[in-house]
Amino acid sequence: MSMTSPSAIIKGAYSLITGLGVTLKTFFMPVVTVQYPRQTCEIPPRFRGHTKLVGDEENPDRTKCVVCMACVKACPSHSIKKIEGEKKEGEKKKTCTEYILDFTTCSQCGICVETCNFDALAFSADYNRAVYTRAECQFDLVKEYEKRK
Image (tube, rainbow, N blue to C red; front, side):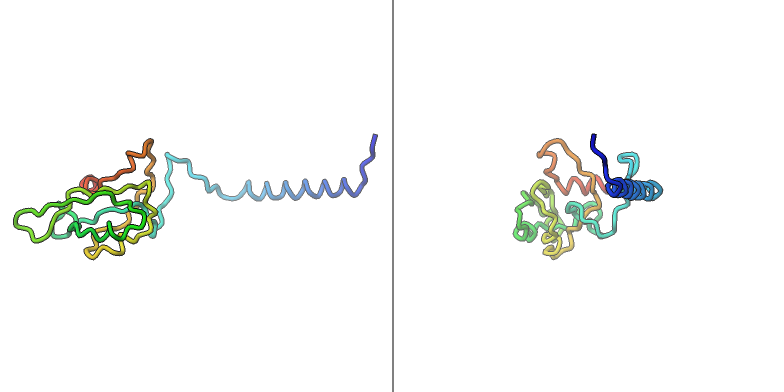
């Protein structure tokens, strides 16, 4: 049978008391855990969600996008897969009819938003984009805009 030295017992007791002190201090601190999905976090104002199309102030039924393709050329990860538009009768500019963004490859760098000369792109506040397949990450931003109207 081996005898434990008194200094080892003192070191062990000190370590135990220190650990209990940390635990008690943390126990009485406010809880920071959010009970998701019943509760959600407040989104900071500078949050960058995926790209969204901005509506035209003069005609709220359409977006500001005139299909100039500057965002497609500027995208370093080639996440903007397809932009199509049509020139409607009586209008000077094209109207965007389809804008496909592949969110699986988008790095949210913001270059597309910065290069848009018509301020047609902005960052959304959507943060909960949980999906089951990659195909669901192909967003048509025109349809997303029509849902938001």
